[in-house]
Length: 363
Image (cartoon, rainbow, N blue to C red; front, side, top):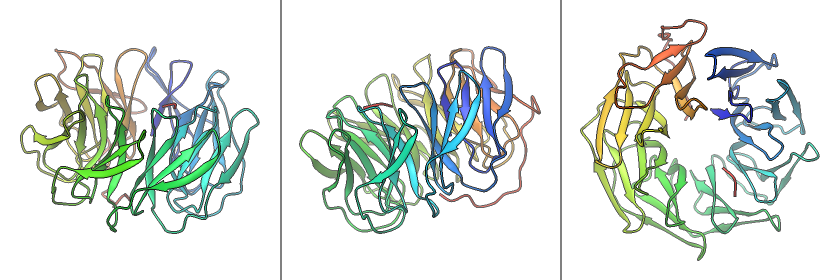
C-alpha cells in the first residue's frame, strides 16, 4: 500500500521490497529510501500520525516501520513481535496513537508516536485471520472488520478497552475491509461473505444486509462516492456493488466484467469518478457515481498482480503502487482521460511478471 506524506510525496510501504518507495508527483521522480529490509510480507499498511511521520504496521516484520518525510529518515522500533500475519491495517485514534487490527496476533497493537513506543492491549484474542482492516466510527471508537472472526472488534482509544460486538455466522474470509458512509454506519465489503456487513457505532448494532451474493473474493476495497453511496471494487465478481446507506439498498451496477483478480482498491478522483487500480485487469476501472456508469479506460496494461491500491497525489493524479509491476501507474482524472501512463525505472512499460498466487484516516 501507499500513503501520502506531509511533504506532498507518496510513500510505498515495503512488503517484499527491501526499501521504501518514494514518488514525487511534482517532478515525477521515483526513488527509494532506507533499508535494506530483508524478508517478505514485512509491513502491509501505513498510517500518518500527528507528527507527520508514517508508521508501517507489522505483518511478518517484528518491529514498527517509521518514515519521516521531512528528512527522508527511515527506521524501525518496538518489538520484537514474533509471528506472521500479525496485524492487518491500522487506524489513528483520537488520542494520537495508532491501533493495529489483529489478524493472527492475539492482541491489538498500540503505537505511541510521541514516545516511539509500541505495545499490545486487550486479548487474548484467539484464532487466525480474525479481522482485516479497521475503520474509525463517529463515536471515536475503532471497528475491526471480521474476516474469520464471528464478531466485530471494537477498540476504545480513550480507555484502552478492547471488546467485540454482535454475533455473526461462522466462516472464512467473510468481509475484507470496509467504509464509513454518510449515515455514520460502517459497511463491511463481502469477500466470501454472501451479504454486506453493517455496523451502527452509536447503538452497537451489527447486522447483514443485501444478497445473497455468490462467489469468493468478490470485492476488495470500497470508496464512498460524491452521492454518499459506497462502491465496492470487483476482484473476482463481474460487477460493481453499490450500497445506498440511507435506504440499505444494495445493487449491482454496470456491465459484466469477466476475469479474476481484476482490481484491488479504488480512489475518488478530482473529477468525481472512482478509479479502480488494476491488479490483473488490463485497464483501469472507472465508476461515475452521478450516472452509475461503469467503464474501463486505458491499457492494455500487461501482466498480473501489477499494482495494489492507489493514492491521490498533490497534483490531482492517482498513483498505483507497484506490486509486481516495474513502474508506477499514473492516472490523470478528467473528461479527456485515455491511456494511463507509467513512470519509474522503466517509464512507459509494464512488467509482465511470472504468475504466482498472492495471499489474500483519523478518528
